[in-house]
Image (tube, rainbow, N blue to C red):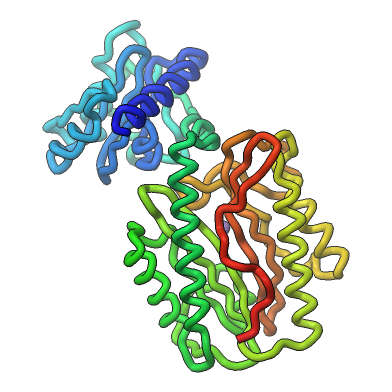
Length: 369
Ligand SMILES: [Mn+2]
C-alpha cells in the first residue's frame, strides 16, 4: 500500500515534469497545500515544493521536520528545513539551482499573493525570471487514480449515512444549528477528519438562499429544509444535498420537487465519457425550463470533487471540456424562490468508460416529515 502511493507521487511528478519541460521553465514552485499534498503526501500548513527536471525539493519549517521526512520517505523528494523564513529560503534556493545561469521559475498566480511573490522574487534576485503557470497541478488532479476513487467513494458513503441519520432528526421545533451540529458530530463519529465545507441547513424562506449558514431559526410545519453536507475522509471530499418537507406539501410544491428531481436525473444521465462538461447543465436547464422553473435555477450544475470540495472541471452553461474516465463531479441543480423556499438535490458521480457511478446513496424520493 505504502509502495503504491509512493509510485503515484512519482507518476504525478513525472507528468508535471513533462509539462515543465515543454514550457521551457527550469522549476515549478508549488505553493497551494492541496497541490503539495497531491504531489508529495506532505500535509503541513507551511511548505513550498520546488519541482525541477531532475529533483524535487520540499522546503518546510522545523515544526514539520519529523512529519515531512516521514511523508517524503520513498518518494525521492528531498526535504530541506531552512533557517530563513520559507519564502526567502525558496527564493534563494531557486537562484542557486544548477543548470543554466539564467533560471525561469513557473508559479501559479492563483495560489501566491502579490506580497509572497514579491518576497520570493526579491530573495531570488536577478538570476531568476518568473512565468505564470495557471492550474498545472489542478489539471492533473481532474483524473483520479483508482485509489483516489476508492477514497472519494468512502467519503460519499460516509456522508450518505450522516444525511440519512440527520433526516431522522428533522421535526418542527429543532433549530438549523442543532441539525448542523448533529451532522458535524456524526461525520466525526464515523471517522471523518471533518466537514468539507461549512454544513448548510436552511429551512423555510432561508432555503431560497443557496449558501445559507445555519441559524437559530426553528423548523416549522409547511416548509422545505435543505441539508447540504460534505465530509473529508482520508483527505478526500464528498458533497451532497437533500431537500425534505416538514408537513404535507401542496400539489404545487410537490410539482416543484418532482421537476428538480427530474432535472437532476437528466443531468446525471448526461454525464458520459466524450460528452461536453456543459451537457449536464443544459439537460437540467431544459427540464426546468419545461416546467417554467428555469428562471429559479440561479447557479451552475456542478463541479469536480477530490482533495478540494470545489475543483475542476466546472459543470456550467456552455463549458466545452469533455468528460474523461475517472473524473468525479457533483450534480446539483436547484430552484430558489424568494420568500417561499428552495429545493436542491446533489449527488457525487464518478465517470467511467461507458458508465457512471452515483457515489452518494441517500434516497431522493420526495419525503414529507
Ligand atoms: Mn456542491
